Image 1: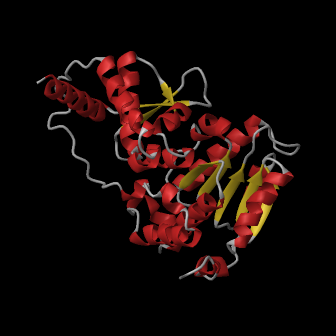
Image 2: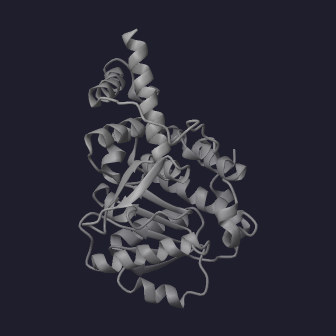
Length: 313
């Protein structure tokens, strides 16, 4: 079985191009660096305040790891400094120049996800060693693809990326928690024949009954047997749409009923596939809402309407 030494011996890592680590405190910086260096990366640490100036002086880097923590730290930097850093990192990742990983506490899901939506950015929530290793494997696969950093938007998820994720899972022996990897979702998703057609009337009570029925299973079976974050989020967003409620990212993660990091990957995949839309909160720039795209809303309403008619029959 291949070990993590594979990552340390890859061509990308042999070049000793560093992973930049911006952290909210000395302790957070040490925590991030320890995991990176154990996997064979050379790290360059910096405080969040002044990180943009440090990045401007950096000739090259394999990527950026931002380690945040609840309450911050003495060198954790201001929220403005963090916002600027996240906006910069998101822009660089979108341009294919600097893949970015952010590790954050649950309380920071909304402000961080509001700034981080580009391809090749990852948001980890209270990550354990397995999740950290998985994120590094995904980033490593990005770096290993020829010309990826110059033409990343035109390449689908590679088979090698999935193999690396599986490899880390076998090493850790606990990657089953993340087995519902959104990268395995088919890219071609069946849409309604006429997305602009009339949506059938759907009562919120029916949707709530479906959600309650799904949750009822946890009383009798292990909840992990039925983990289906995509469906749970679709139902939650439909219920919110009918009630005319807005759903922030953090709330949708809870509705997904899986670890927050997994839920965030699914939200990103569903958005990339045109099922979810991101909408900025007009009153708070540090938060975005997730809503069903029109075609997804129509499909869900037709499903619930047909479900109701079949049950009634």
